[in-house]
Image (cartoon, helix red, strand yellow):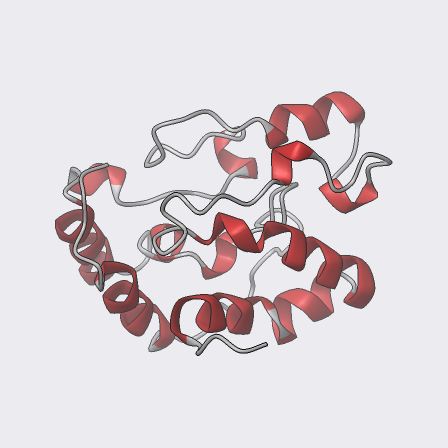
Length: 160
Protein backbone atom coordinates (compact mmCIF):
# COMPACT_ATOMS: atom_id res chain seq x y z
CA UNK A 1 0.00 0.00 0.00
CA UNK A 2 1.28 3.43 -0.85
CA UNK A 3 1.53 6.31 1.61
CA UNK A 4 -1.76 8.14 1.94
CA UNK A 5 -2.96 11.60 2.67
CA UNK A 6 -3.64 11.97 6.44
CA UNK A 7 -7.37 12.54 5.87
CA UNK A 8 -7.75 9.53 3.55
CA UNK A 9 -9.51 7.19 5.99
CA UNK A 10 -11.82 10.02 7.06
CA UNK A 11 -12.73 10.76 3.44
CA UNK A 12 -13.57 7.11 2.87
CA UNK A 13 -15.40 6.89 6.21
CA UNK A 14 -17.58 9.88 5.29
CA UNK A 15 -18.54 8.07 2.09
CA UNK A 16 -19.19 4.80 3.96
CA UNK A 17 -21.33 6.54 6.62
CA UNK A 18 -23.73 7.69 3.90
CA UNK A 19 -24.36 4.12 2.75
CA UNK A 20 -27.38 2.32 4.23
CA UNK A 21 -26.56 -0.72 6.40
CA UNK A 22 -27.03 -4.03 4.64
CA UNK A 23 -30.38 -5.52 5.54
CA UNK A 24 -29.30 -9.13 5.07
CA UNK A 25 -25.76 -9.19 6.44
CA UNK A 26 -24.60 -12.57 7.76
CA UNK A 27 -22.79 -11.22 10.81
CA UNK A 28 -21.23 -14.55 11.75
CA UNK A 29 -19.73 -14.98 8.28
CA UNK A 30 -18.80 -11.30 7.98
CA UNK A 31 -16.97 -11.06 11.32
CA UNK A 32 -13.57 -12.76 11.42
CA UNK A 33 -12.08 -14.34 14.55
CA UNK A 34 -10.36 -11.05 15.47
CA UNK A 35 -13.67 -9.19 15.80
CA UNK A 36 -13.28 -6.59 13.07
CA UNK A 37 -16.65 -6.00 11.38
CA UNK A 38 -16.01 -6.80 7.71
CA UNK A 39 -19.64 -5.84 7.04
CA UNK A 40 -18.79 -2.22 8.00
CA UNK A 41 -15.48 -2.00 6.13
CA UNK A 42 -15.16 0.21 3.07
CA UNK A 43 -13.29 -2.51 1.16
CA UNK A 44 -16.22 -4.91 1.64
CA UNK A 45 -18.87 -2.28 0.93
CA UNK A 46 -17.00 -1.35 -2.27
CA UNK A 47 -18.20 -4.65 -3.79
CA UNK A 48 -21.64 -3.09 -4.23
CA UNK A 49 -20.61 0.54 -4.60
CA UNK A 50 -18.27 1.20 -7.56
CA UNK A 51 -17.82 4.86 -6.61
CA UNK A 52 -16.46 3.76 -3.23
CA UNK A 53 -14.19 1.22 -4.94
CA UNK A 54 -12.77 4.02 -7.14
CA UNK A 55 -12.28 6.31 -4.13
CA UNK A 56 -10.42 3.58 -2.22
CA UNK A 57 -8.26 2.78 -5.25
CA UNK A 58 -7.33 6.42 -5.75
CA UNK A 59 -6.82 7.16 -2.05
CA UNK A 60 -4.58 4.20 -1.31
CA UNK A 61 -2.85 4.12 -4.69
CA UNK A 62 -3.82 0.52 -5.37
CA UNK A 63 -5.31 -1.07 -8.49
CA UNK A 64 -9.10 -0.80 -8.59
CA UNK A 65 -9.45 -4.62 -8.54
CA UNK A 66 -7.64 -4.69 -5.16
CA UNK A 67 -9.96 -2.03 -3.71
CA UNK A 68 -12.52 -4.65 -2.68
CA UNK A 69 -12.68 -7.55 -0.24
CA UNK A 70 -15.25 -10.29 0.28
CA UNK A 71 -14.58 -10.50 4.01
CA UNK A 72 -11.95 -12.40 5.94
CA UNK A 73 -13.87 -15.67 6.30
CA UNK A 74 -14.79 -15.63 2.59
CA UNK A 75 -11.16 -14.98 1.64
CA UNK A 76 -9.71 -17.77 3.81
CA UNK A 77 -8.23 -15.28 6.26
CA UNK A 78 -6.45 -13.23 3.61
CA UNK A 79 -6.99 -9.56 2.86
CA UNK A 80 -5.68 -8.81 -0.61
CA UNK A 81 -5.20 -5.14 0.22
CA UNK A 82 -3.00 -5.83 3.26
CA UNK A 83 0.68 -6.56 2.62
CA UNK A 84 1.05 -9.16 5.38
CA UNK A 85 -0.57 -12.47 6.25
CA UNK A 86 -2.95 -12.66 9.20
CA UNK A 87 -1.74 -14.67 12.21
CA UNK A 88 -5.12 -14.73 13.97
CA UNK A 89 -7.20 -16.54 11.39
CA UNK A 90 -5.07 -19.72 11.19
CA UNK A 91 -4.68 -19.70 14.98
CA UNK A 92 -8.46 -19.66 15.48
CA UNK A 93 -8.89 -22.41 12.89
CA UNK A 94 -6.24 -24.54 14.60
CA UNK A 95 -7.92 -24.06 17.99
CA UNK A 96 -11.40 -24.71 16.56
CA UNK A 97 -12.91 -21.43 17.77
CA UNK A 98 -15.03 -18.89 15.90
CA UNK A 99 -13.86 -15.78 17.73
CA UNK A 100 -10.72 -14.99 19.71
CA UNK A 101 -12.71 -14.11 22.85
CA UNK A 102 -13.60 -17.83 23.10
CA UNK A 103 -9.93 -18.75 23.53
CA UNK A 104 -8.41 -19.51 26.93
CA UNK A 105 -5.40 -17.38 25.89
CA UNK A 106 -7.54 -14.29 25.16
CA UNK A 107 -6.20 -11.65 24.90
CA UNK A 108 -2.93 -12.79 23.40
CA UNK A 109 -0.04 -11.05 21.67
CA UNK A 110 -1.64 -11.68 18.26
CA UNK A 111 -4.18 -9.01 19.30
CA UNK A 112 -1.58 -6.56 20.58
CA UNK A 113 -2.28 -2.98 19.44
CA UNK A 114 0.40 -1.03 17.62
CA UNK A 115 0.90 2.71 17.19
CA UNK A 116 2.40 2.24 13.74
CA UNK A 117 -0.30 3.38 11.29
CA UNK A 118 -2.89 3.46 14.08
CA UNK A 119 -4.45 6.48 12.42
CA UNK A 120 -4.95 4.54 9.20
CA UNK A 121 -6.12 1.09 10.25
CA UNK A 122 -8.65 0.13 12.85
CA UNK A 123 -6.98 -3.10 13.87
CA UNK A 124 -6.34 -1.57 17.30
CA UNK A 125 -10.09 -1.92 17.98
CA UNK A 126 -10.01 -5.73 17.87
CA UNK A 127 -9.86 -6.41 21.63
CA UNK A 128 -12.53 -3.78 22.34
CA UNK A 129 -14.82 -5.28 19.69
CA UNK A 130 -14.23 -8.82 20.97
CA UNK A 131 -15.06 -7.77 24.53
CA UNK A 132 -18.25 -6.10 23.32
CA UNK A 133 -19.19 -9.21 21.31
CA UNK A 134 -18.67 -11.41 24.36
CA UNK A 135 -20.75 -9.07 26.52
CA UNK A 136 -23.53 -8.18 24.06
CA UNK A 137 -23.62 -11.18 21.74
CA UNK A 138 -22.67 -11.14 18.07
CA UNK A 139 -25.97 -9.90 16.62
CA UNK A 140 -26.50 -7.07 19.13
CA UNK A 141 -22.88 -5.93 18.77
CA UNK A 142 -23.10 -6.03 14.97
CA UNK A 143 -26.37 -4.14 14.79
CA UNK A 144 -25.98 -1.69 17.67
CA UNK A 145 -22.27 -1.03 18.27
CA UNK A 146 -19.80 -2.10 15.56
CA UNK A 147 -20.31 0.88 13.27
CA UNK A 148 -20.10 3.36 16.14
CA UNK A 149 -16.79 1.82 17.30
CA UNK A 150 -15.44 2.43 13.79
CA UNK A 151 -16.85 5.97 13.67
CA UNK A 152 -15.50 6.95 17.09
CA UNK A 153 -12.09 5.43 16.29
CA UNK A 154 -11.73 7.52 13.15
CA UNK A 155 -13.71 10.62 14.05
CA UNK A 156 -14.26 10.87 17.79
CA UNK A 157 -12.43 13.21 20.10
CA UNK A 158 -10.00 11.59 22.52
CA UNK A 159 -11.24 11.62 26.10
CA UNK A 160 -10.21 10.11 29.41
